[in-house]
Length: 233
Ligand code: SF4
Image (cartoon, rainbow, N blue to C red; front, side, top):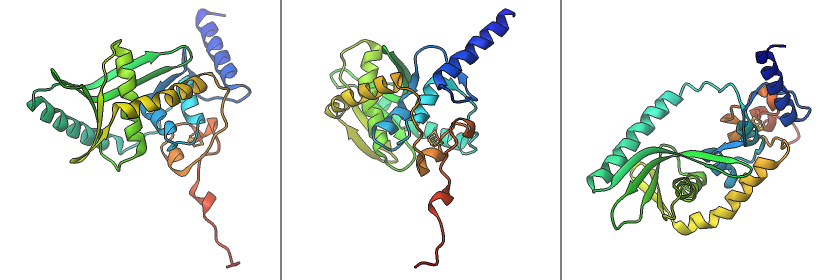
């Protein structure tokens, strides 16, 4: 057997091992389970009740659902982000946009991208997330998470304030909210990083935006599951 075949077999074996007896159409990732901040924020606040989704995404690469609205959403988000960043620059802040961060723990990796980070002499530094949709609890949780992880990624003891911007409205996120989230966040990462494959928990909203192929889940939410006709009333 050639080197390439050996590597492919090892990869397939790793996938089978990670999935137990489950057949998997996804490609195993190397290294620790690796999570993305927005997905973890949704689980933290209960907007996504399905642990299987982040569990699979952290361990496997796979085909992504093609979403024709994504290009329009990205352009809209980028324009709003630049507008907000410019307001802060004009007020004398040093502004970084789309700052990537990554923190590696013993059992899991957490990565993300903060929309805007503002710093100014004698002011508390600020992390801003610009949202284009309706306000959600996970938006606040995502900024709180970034307020915890960016100092860790930068290896500093800086304390950040947070802000979620919706149109011309803003929701503050305090350092205290971030500190209160910390034990819950770290426990979730430890649990997701070490648990066996969890059972899926389909939900209308979480399944609608889930990229996991049906071959790897099989219980994707269908609207007809909750719609029926009866003659009994
Ligand atoms: S399709 Fe639904 S049930 Fe399946 S992994 Fe995704 S969110 Fe979970």
